[in-house]
Image (cartoon, rainbow, N blue to C red; front, top):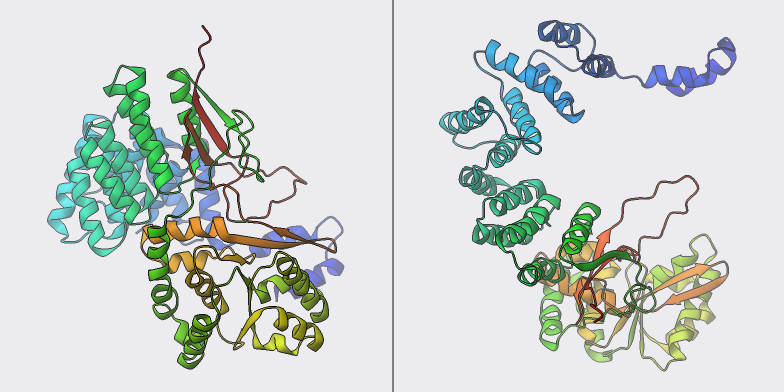
Length: 525
């Protein structure tokens, strides 16, 4: 209906009324009127709270008597109008005999935000403590939103023991958020509870909750407070960098800035640098990052788990038959080991908008490339590909071991399993980032082993005009690394949004120019 109105408006409306005006009118939801008024009111510091509420409720929208207090507070906090929010919170506490759970959560959220920059007043602290007691007296189990709000507010007043209780209770029903873990970890370091903080870091990592800026900042501040000798502080900061290495973590820009400031304060050269993609060489210190190969034990652990967790343990039987799966495993036993496993359909679709003839010719180019290197190749495709150009397919099948799955089967698990079961020297060729398969490996250690294996063994194929580009695996591991001089740490650069800037292909690797180089200054005597 909207489309018809827009079409008619081109011919029926006066010239001074644009189609865009009509579109804005049609897209305007009833709730916008309430929110536009609220935002306008708080921007002018309007603080006649009964009138504000009445005005909001008199307009069309989804805000009602039950949620108006929470909406006002959340909007003020979101827009950093903390003084107005504090005034409104005091109004609610003095005028309402019982606060709604939504208003209570919003006040807790306000006090958490205020506590980031200054100490809360005695009455604000008491409100948080009273709320903790009242909620646990009233409810046996707190809902997720209330638990998160309460935990953050308790951390704002350094009540870490009570926050620990809330987190433990929250863990019984769901996984706490990244912010809940990092806020509590930062609070523990802030209160010099280093053992508890390190234990909480382990819990956070096991729940797939990487550390956020506040946790890293307070971790660094703890060592700066505790030790006076610069060498001792540097030694302990290695613990933080080792954590980043162990978990293949990529720190944020804010944490990178904090590390630059901290290491510079300690007399080190600390700078943002570029690492050359082809070689892994740092453009500042000229050191080359290493390829951190899996040990024999690590590869065997990955190999042992991959078949059960990726095929038998997943929903493969929903997409293939036990017969096909057994045929494939028997085929691998008979024909492995391979040097290269090709994800044939993925490679062919590098020329996705072209004909099947061009796709199979492109696949032939890739096969010829690896045949020229005397590699034993497994070509994994789907059966509909057998309808492509017959002579070219016969050419490919004569030069490779080949297996074609049913069209409805999910071929990626076949492809990954064949490569890993083949042995530690086998490489794969695919543009797929394989993120979904890392997810199926629930254990964090296995996820990281799979990621490292993928970086070291995955070739990618691209099309530049009419010319194929066959990109070898990385020559270095894009994780935090220590050499004899210092550290290189990857960080996540802020997105560039400049008009006309070409978007970069996401190949699953941290940005190559998003690195920190931390090294001691050389004193020339």
